[in-house]
Image 1 (cartoon, rainbow, N blue to C red):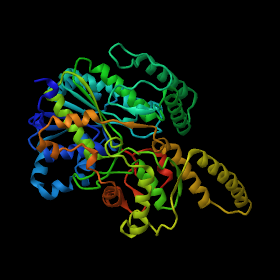
Image 2 (cartoon, one colour):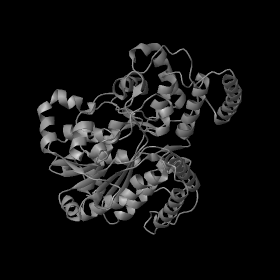
Image 3 (tube, one colour):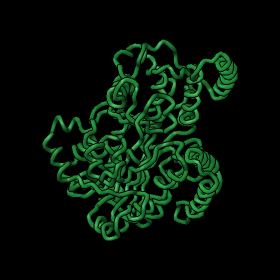
Image 4 (cartoon, one colour):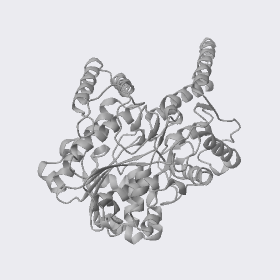
Length: 514
């Protein structure tokens, strides 16, 4: 029997010790919950968590920010004793920082940690699309030096969570393979991945130059953000997030040469399809920021292609793909693999359809979403092409400048509502319009083939096929209800803005990203 034909099983995780990063974030919580509920005989889960504000330890952060999460509500209701025992006996919390050598641990402690880990799943990332380059580079790319060092020392597989959007400015059919830069040239290694040393050196020189020339903290942060966007565009990516995640893939491939590496690339991750509950979500994601702005009357149009396919994938399907990839890496570890979790090929949904579904649901049932809508929505939401958007924004800016000048002359304080809407719309467009102007289609053939190597019972327990999604049901029932119930703590306050800090313009007083 060929290795590729070998029957796989999630039971490969039985008794194993899984190091999982990123559990203060959204996706890793879904992975953790699924492991606890569906792989009950797993050995233990080691959580690497950075020290919190006020010097809180990893265990203190776990108890406060993770163990209390509503993602565990199903387990609390169905098997509360099992959940409590698991938290107490099989969750180990390590206070450490993925951006530091040895995770900031003493050398002997790092070696000791490596001696009792069987597989590493790295979901730690900054998902701020417009973060200062030094910060994004540290967590999304340079941290792979330290993660691969641990995996090598432990001689265990690494499952690296990336994003489909490492495909950058390419067009067409995007398959599960190494991505080459769409912009400026970068040297490719003979083993297939791209050499990062020279590029990282250049970026770090530019970062240090900005830091040396700008001392005011907010201005320095803005300059480093602008540098990140400029460098990303130069090499063929839309934003700092996708650029540095691509760099992270290259460093993972280099660091895991001759060892088991699985890269899992999700598309736009949104609320869960079924598990642990339909619509479970934590924070405001890409589509949600626009929904919230519409609900609050802060925008009514956006640049997008109505007939373009927007690639959205529920978080539980992504978590299942991660777990299947980890089980495969343990049973059949001798190669590098890339999997894409996406819907655009197997179950495409068009942007115009999504907007119509959501707008109709909002107008029909707005009172059911009491945390989302403060008043009945009476205005329509429209999508326009980029040229029309730019023309409309220019015309509105010119008119509002005159009106703002008149307000000053009349002694009227504060920003006008029209100016606030203009600023919000522009911020959303700058941040998200690339993702609503699709130029390619992500393939997921290898992921589906991986699932077929598991028995039918496990395929049913860990589904990855986007064909299971009924889009009207998902958006109008699960997602809207989940956004209202889980992402919003009270009227007007999002729990967290995960996609970008710039969406703080959309709503008042958002919580800080952990």
